[in-house]
Image (cartoon, helix red, strand yellow):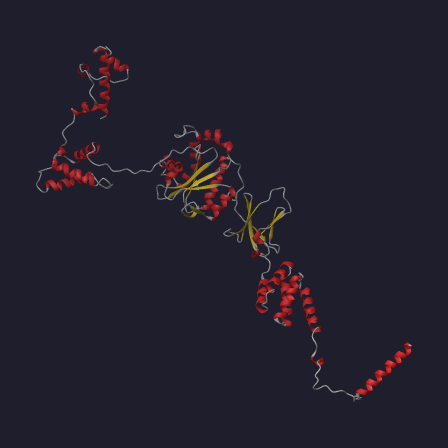
Length: 541
């Protein structure tokens, strides 16, 4: 078909040259000068004598042979089978050929099929191209062109495994700079865990001379503990490393390698370009040679996507935008330093003190300072993190950094005393009085309430009298136990003074005079009165 299209172009040029007045004998020379292969002289003469150029379809129609399987009996079965199996990826033309033999030859309809399997295969291709068979609907993923991120923004990480001769497997980790395509590969004889991955990432930062902002990873179990509807939970080690290095994380969807195609291509590139020609070598030599291979690809090979050498591209655009490297526990020794927990619940690092939970007092704990973070663990393996502090700047000295959860919590026993008072002596002003005691004696509210309860238990007062005492305390803002006792005793004394004892009550029925009383007549008192009146008048005169 491609040859016929080229011939159609040449024929069209011949007709155009004829109309321009070019002689037939000069056509071949002119076509050669136009970088077109001239046909033979008879062919030039044939088309030179035409008025209009034939199309490519007209040129090919004369050379088409009759289709061997155009027989209606064969074509019907072929069209039906192709239409039914348009979604069947396991369908083969050999199976269709066998079906035709079963339906036509074995039943005696035809003595033999008109062609072989290859002829049938060509005929099926012809039917699909001419639209006689419905094509399979392709529902592919819709893509958008993704621009390269800004310099210093993103790196991608993925794992790979390669089996070599002898059955050994080499596990390798690939890190790629998204913009400049710098690649970094490390290998080992076992799967990478979280600590080894973090160590490789930090070694890459050292190699490149700075830190990037974002890390793109797949949902590998060494790094991601779980993911549910976008809620990602990192493993403990990896989460600590991200915080230490101040890295943002972009986690691809599960089983979606196309979202980080750059590093996915790198894994395949490592297998094809490095391992494929070295499978007969030992695993030690292959692992040792990865560094030199990366250097060659970074400094010598022109990248097909950027059309630039990766290392030159990096140094010109990205190196100046990287953040400076931070110290890391994954950059060298990971040994934890032991220290004895004292009664102050703090450990000293340089000139400052940092707190740890109270339950680890008088026990051996372990700490590690890395990346501006002081991490405290309960064992030398570092399997349980009990506290973390940001390390103070160098100019901050002799300062205590106490975590809020490590502070000594106040006693809650006063709440039990409060409930006991309310239960035993339930009167309206009791809750008001207790609240006043707690507010007025914040540090000693437990002791104050205990003293009030002990005093009342010893007195066992009536509810009415106690309400009077409490009301007087609340109105005078007397919320201390000594003030409460003074008011209690004062009111008790007032009541005792206003009350007449039973011994002083007069009873006429039982009262008798101790002496005899003289009884006089009324006339005696009248005469005595008259005499006194006369004496008084004489004195006046």
